[in-house]
Length: 580
Image (cartoon, rainbow, N blue to C red):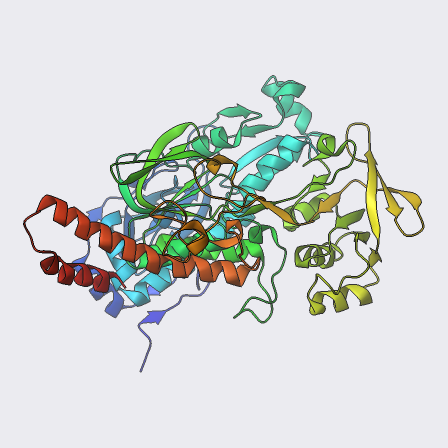
């Protein structure tokens, strides 16, 4: 029996990518799409969508050809990304995340196609498994290709080592947005651009947008708004659940809540993934025998949640929470408030900082809390320092040892075995690229315009030694992200949210406020592991269902006070059964 899914081959010109990039829907799958959308014929050169548009329709080519291209207008050279023909379809991850589309689309010749709106596409993603999987695979691959090619993104101009350039690069990288960088210190062409746009040192870094706009040292929220990464159009919806934080726990809660029919929104101030998203490789997570990078895990989890209809608000933090008439109101930084019947706190924790003179002077400009490909590129062929004795520090040391000149792993304790997984310890001990300094600590950092020297003291001998180091990776434990909740939720003396019976809640993940839950690293007593956070995020949804079911019964009783209580019980059971 032949599969209803076939693939085309890539031609020599590169204009017709194939495989998971641009698969061909078989006649059987095209027939199944006949009940969705409308068939129409467009003339040659007709524009179906342009870069910067949101919520564009999904187009399936029945007979003819569509051209996907970058660049438009008199000042931008066009670049053909792909030519789609019979049985192929448009779209990448913008079909799921409501971001502005990165490319343009026009008909190469008179073309018969099926136009499917976003609402119908959402139904397809839920009910047509084969087609949904095909859309997911090709969307992920197409976005990855756009990021790697970077031709459809923005251009960053500035000094590669500056704190603001690194800040912007990190945001774009972790949110999967394509960009190219011109280093004002190393690239000769940078002077031409600086003169052309009449830029000063204070203006750098600048983001040069495809439409000609120039953003001078933009804030993350300004950049996100300008690129269409944030979506602030809808402030009237009352969600069933609002999840604050998009680490593993928050993403798991989003996947399970949305897949079970709950109206779900996730609010994240930086980028999906949390601390796990900054890990170079996680090798002890179930189902990934060869390991998975934290960013890959978070990106796929994000797409999975969007597949089921979860909404995401990226680039702004929640600043406060209040309750009125049974609805929680989350105030967002410089944005409309979000309303929800339940709230899941999954804000995780942040790495602690070293108590060293000049530390804040070099923070994010030589001092890092993540070890991803971006950071590895900053310190290639240099000697670096990693501080910490946990799994995150071990993973960072091994990853960075592949591209740096040498790695010094600084540990305050007398051994690695007490705090680090054995498989990491054994690899570190046999690596010629890593030197472990036990019972040691950094006592000073110095440099003129950037970090250049680090002094390390051996606490056993009290002897200090200074090294030429420009990059230090600090991974020494974490503190909870709960400052915005002080005075609202019950916390322990370290700031972690208290849940369950200790918070006088009947729900295991419940807080002292009914309908508010805490999961993952932010929760008091949680196990600080990715698998544990994912488990808590998925399990909390069952508690949310129970709360929503009970709340619906109470609302019905208030609206119909004469109705016997017994009569309302089957309704509650039916509601709960229908969503679990």
